[in-house]
Length: 223
Ligand SMILES: [Zn+2]
Image 1 (cartoon, rainbow, N blue to C red):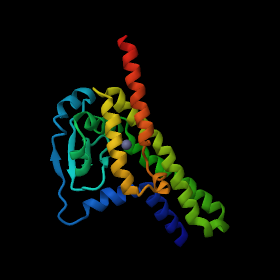
Image 2: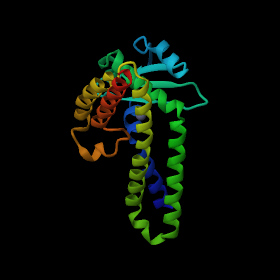
Image 3: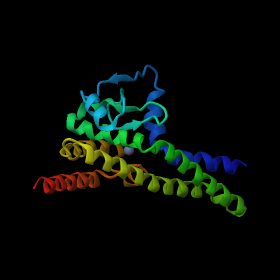
């Protein structure tokens, strides 16, 4: 019984550590206020592109460039960005992150992630139930399944980035935005590649490649 509890706690922590640490960690700080921001004047443009009435909030996190879509359909879309991200990015760069988070909402990603987490959890519990003798390595199995979840969840990140880059006015914003972000966030991870492997995101290098390909594609169409 204890090991099942331990399994569930470790598994959910591995799956959601970014949200727990950076989102929840910030929100439970005393005197933290989320403030509604205007999305760099993009709200109207984004509404035309996505049909969404977005609420864009910022939280007073000054060291990391992070953003979250914290809602899912059928609830109204709400995205939260760190102050550092919001103030560091220009309009074109911010359009990328806002479209990325909008993509998550439009494609029901949060709901899909919750379902994925529960399906993998149930598989893990069934496996442990069959192999009682394995209880001693329960934490390892929880970690492995959490890792598998992260790798699967990255597929949705590709979808959100693809949605963003193909809908951006200026895909160069995704390139410069990622250069800024990787500089700031590398410091945050201390260049720790182990932690980097536990982040549910497309790497900055790959995002830059996606943007370059989109720029090439648009040039071809123009010709
Ligand atoms: Zn994302």
